Length: 265
Image 1 (cartoon, rainbow, N blue to C red):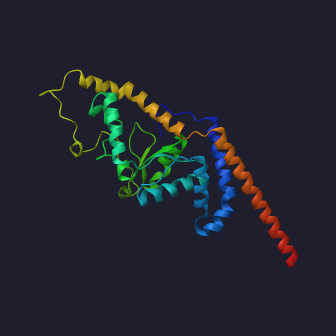
Image 2 (image 1 turned 90 degrees about the vertical axis):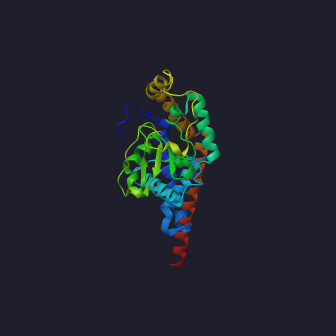
Image 3 (image 1 turned 60 degrees about the vertical axis):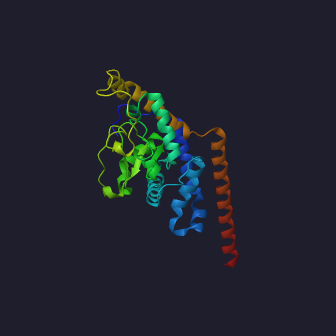
């Protein structure tokens, strides 16, 4: 992704990925019984549900959900990469509240749009935008997502991807931030109380936001995304115990099957 600054891979991330992959392998027999034609996808979904218990795919369009499911199934089985969902569909009221909070924080609608869009322009509201985690999973999705019509859209948000089937495998032009390339007439900002040119202090503030403050805020959002995917010791223990139970069940099944075959002979 050629990022100037990347989020370092935490040692426990590799452990989580290994444990989740092992768990998916152990769940394959049960998934095959449940759905023979899509066993790998089902086992992947079960394992990732334990790794990212808080994620919610509800509200995504059928196309976006199918593409995301297929992409992270390939990521897990072929490359051992985990891809979790931090934020998918958002209710318009939630999106409006996020935009209003960013306006208050940054001081103007123009600077707020560098990070958050109003509901009329947000693809989260349309159900085709996905914020993913962790950073390595996003890197994989940027490299391989085109075959599923999933593309990274903004330079300042490594976690944000959108389902764009109309692109037909050609990545859409990358934008510096969410405020570029949207029609502001869809949700015009409040008219300023002055007439004529903007006050001289406004434009420098926006420019400063684009450099220093913007990077700090984006880094904060990235860390929030990673914290959202953090698993505590109890969660890891649950995955390990579940894996052991599935393994013992599989071994018992094999032993019983061998015993039955021996008696039939």
